[in-house]
Length: 587
Image (cartoon, rainbow, N blue to C red; front, top):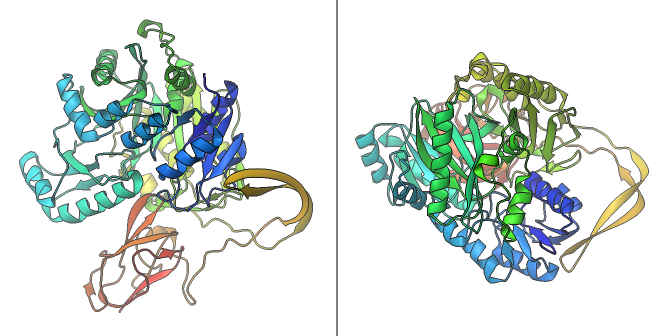
């Protein structure tokens, strides 16, 4: 096995990998940005080293810094988690060239399958049918128009080097093509370090079904089972489950065999997920994620295997310890991604902030994977995933009931989360009867009418004497020292506002100021201004984008609530703004 493992990631996936490494007796090394200096994954690892910077590009996407930490720490293996560099062939090659084992597929397989365009070509060569689409990067928005006119609208722009809905835009007509491509490329660049995009047909009512596969270096490949990930908003998953409900076993077998065929055709090794769209009894290859998936715990609970432990063993050169016939799937598992988002009005806007209380649920068949504790801050610069709540039941109805109970037990204060929306989804008859699709959540009337109150912020301070862990950083390495010191138990977390304005109500998510027609365009969340769409003196209509705001790796258009002339613009691209800040005045 390995003498020391560096986890090149953050949040719950870093904690989850470190836990398995501890069980295997492998010392762990964490890395962290300036904002993550006291994060849970940093506190939990055996060693931690600073990368510097705040944004992902300055820290977790800095190859040179990570290579420096590998050399300093003496780690002989690196796990990339998911996101960041997990599907970057150049990064994987840099790690292996340094003599360190990359826990994932070989760089050559990432180049084929990590690039969504070449993966479509590889799947076709392996005899697996895909959704109609292009097989080269888009160079101009006119290509989108031509594709839409040939195959029909809407069409989907997708990032070639990423997943999770980042860099994906649905285009309903030719007039939207140019702005959509620009936005998709910008978001893809920030999330994955590559801006290339491609286009494919957008199915009308599909379900998103994916197959978990594993391949070893001896040429063996298996599929462990499928996951239904159809409950989505903004093309990003909210709820995943295994097995997929109302899913014929003959289709399951065919899909599993197709997934393994695609993987073996490109010399794949380690964990991977082959994603399909399923509609009217037919399935189509969508893409392959050359990494561990966020939703991998539901497969773990159904097959009874630690997938991270299996990843580590295969990376060490071991053969798969079981054959396809030996895989047994029992019961049903469901995962809810608890995100720092405000689902009011069905908008699911990013809601960064400090968690003041976090009580996890308990009981048989209940698991919580989290990268945060009470007192930790969910930053606007990173992903909005706070925790994953996973349950197992003897069948799907019992798993649904258990998840509802566990969600109700979960207490998170200080930030808004997706829990209220997930409770509505789980209780909906269409979900219980497996009538949902990837487009179903955003059309639910119960979620469109959902309104969450503004989280209470603690007020005042109280000095106490207690034992605290003080962090010191020496030459970029983190050390912890326990001291008895006075500390303040609460601080003011009230958002800054411009004098004379109110924090915008949650019912106007993604729009301007709280008062209809007030003319003050405010932002509903912390974020960074990506683009100012209008100019001073320009005429605007109600609902017209004023600025594009990025928060938690997502772009949101802030819209005008009043028709008129733009009198003043208070921000520029690159500015950081807070919830309730006025960004423009319209008269």
